[in-house]
Length: 413
Image (cartoon, rainbow, N blue to C red):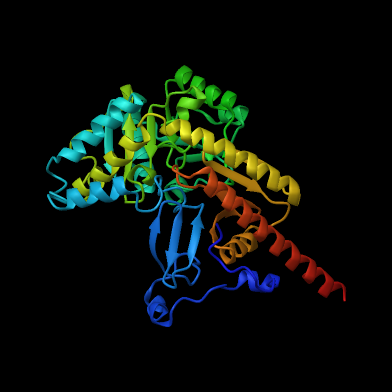
């Protein structure tokens, strides 16, 4: 299925960087009122269903970004719409200082499903990472003579909490370098924090031996292991948590917006000795509110339904095989990832041009790095959706290659 009329003249490289479609004039009148944060295309998106989005001109786009993976079940899934609608008719936010049924049920379900002893519900992955840091340092005060230093393993890009992780008492070491990790730990260290897959750095997985080595180091020294699963948790890697596929167990786990299926919901999970927060040490107006937790329960119920994670594994394999063929055809580089989280390294820094060319083809993609494309489709994506994506991506690659050749000819002349 191709919902676009693709009989257009190939754009130049400059055209690919420019906006390819113009939204209605009335919609764009208000764009100047929005504070700048990220560069956005001009389209105004008005509705979505599953793997598809439609703009205000009724053009359809196949979405293989899904809000950076936040829309775990795709756009407006009926199970999520029904749960939110039903909850909104009874109570939305009774108040942070009061229990609500969704808060208790979701915390209990997360504990049972992940083998965690306590859960705290927040609004975003960044908040959850900051709470994890606060929890680790509280534990350090109680059990490690006030140690507060946290070692962060990264490739220079830890996507969830850049502001927090850049401050003092954080020490950065290279990702997948166990020797550097051993060398960095000292008496002031309270925890090691890392992502099972470095998503923002270009979808770089930790090796199994590295993760197990870090876990062993934490156990030997009696410090905490924090896994940031904002990008990898809630079924994204084919298991409920990525740690399950790697055979490791963290003391603290951070989950992000995928838990809410697109609504602002995140979670902090603690196990055993790491459960040390006391009353009054965490607060937030919307933390654990009834509307968000209803969404979280709907997502969790779906993810844990029989056969769902098998579907993620099967479609993830189909996506991997298709991307591998396409990468080979166009001479691109390494394909990295797991489940339905994949990164494709390009042969040059053309990721931005490919993303804009894909938009022209009616395909929404994300480029975390100048030379890398990231694919985070809905966990409900079909093989037919994947095949259509590969067709449109192939056209986008061809357009960029043609434009690059035209530019080189122009320079040569």
